[in-house]
Length: 94
Length: 460
Image (cartoon, rainbow over all chains, first blue to last red; front, side, top):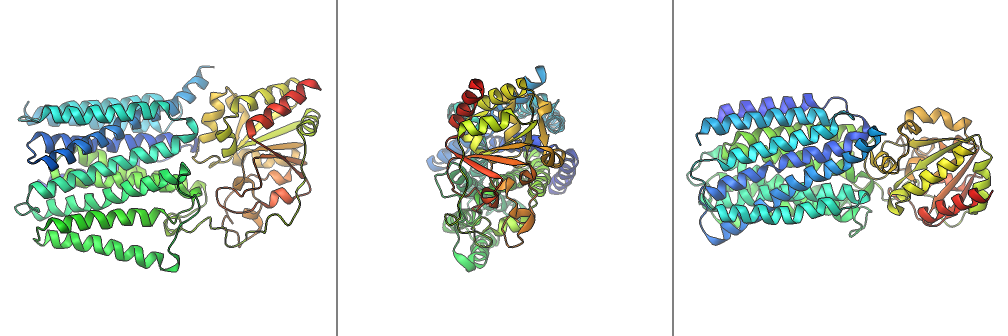
């Protein structure tokens, strides 16, 4: 399982490198914000660890906080990116 | 639902992430790209919730509800000027989530006692980087929000050794845990030392470098998400985290290049202390001008270039500036906007603001295109921009900003600078431009100064 996962890890790294080759300066901030939202995927880790049976009050509290944090990361990240890009969209229409 | 279905849905999510990110790199496709990536996230979330045997539904729902209740209003209400620090905050909580999950992993497996070593290593790596990212991002937020001073805060010459020591302490805790120690004090020590490391690393970095730092921390959070994915054997975390880690590193590099700064130099910190090359302000006189004067100068110019900076963003003066340039154009003056790659506090900051005020896109000129134009320009109007116009970057090797590409505004026939005060800019360096005999200063809030000039123009 580990070796398979490592293979996936390495390949995903190359995909990440390949996707970002040439980006106009204007889009640096929205792109950073968009990738930022994607690593909010850790919220899934919270779902799994909490959902598959966390014991104890402290563990549960920590995981609820972790899920809240992850959700802020995902929801806030995509919304902020959309707002930034909304400025560009309006311009294109005119 | 069977694992095969979940894995297949994950594959759909990856395709959407990658396609979305590709879209985000082009101006026309960016909006759609973001929505596609968000759709990928939705697919990944749904797939995970289909995991067989998942319980604690109310608690999961509670966490998601709290996160949504905080995240949505924060993202909707934040002002365009405060965008950079908002991204820092969102990045930080992501790192915090990773550190918390790693902590629970430690607690519920009795210190990784019966887990393979790689699970412990990956979890602890994720815990260290996640904590650094959480606290580092919070410091970045504090600096940009001006809760913390923007200038570097250092412990002097021993900064690097101290950072290294703290890092070693965190790693030592981790090594002991992997070697079989199960005391929760060690995990606590690892989390505390890596938190301190996050503070120590970002506090000495000057405010001007903050965008690059946020991007770097963003990539780091991605990597720790991938490590957490290895520990949990969850491909969604591995792939999404690693893609962010890799693309985030490239992006960090691109941003640092636009500022002519190297990433090691930024992380080493201390930039913006105003040590070398700072000129004593106050001793030398600057020429002040009035709104009326400025209006007359520009009305009779053939070409005017407007250089917007952070001051324009703070004052929210973009609509007034747009009005001013329309008036000038009616009088037959050619008006362009010179956009420095890092004007404001984020690349693209100015484009966003001016687009909001309906400034036509073809009026915005990037630095390389407009630098040749300054020699032909009668009046350059600098609105709240500072370091990006400082000729010391070209001429004074002792200046901390030496070598940064700048807008050659001092080549135009006359320069009018709108500024709140003589306070130095974000890099903490005095600006030679203001003492140039060609330059006149109009002090005050950018919005009211521009409005005054506009009124004077109408009266002409």
